[in-house]
Image: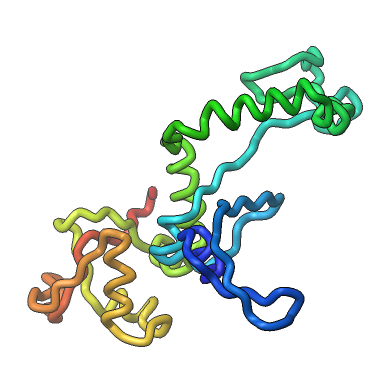
Length: 208
């Protein structure tokens, strides 16, 4: 539910129904975190892109009995390959005072600091959003989105591919603008002379 996620992450007041009874107002005082083994599935509009952060946790916690355990693994922490020995007692340890205090220490340490999103996480989020964007994926099967105004394409090429996905030309052009593709209605395509071109996109070469 993309709209619900936007409302929650924005931190305002939202309406909800408690046990299907009458509606109540909820003042959001939390951030939404979702853990999954699946790829995200959402309509990635500009609002969702601004709010979402996607980070893939690639570390593996295994022992020698795991089918994917490397033959040359020593059983110790391997930071290069992100392989670590699994601790089957961690659920009990986390309940002890020493672990509780350690967790509180980290929460207090970073609670007053601004946490900057790492560039790698930003890039990963962008890649995931692009993969979820059906319009962009369709275009990139044939074209390369460069954002460079020297690359142009006649409007009929774009319209043939994606116009039916939008209610109006304006909504389509607004969507394309988020990719760095702009529309110029007064210029003509040099190949066929048709009026109206898109800038920042070109035909994909055979070796691309």
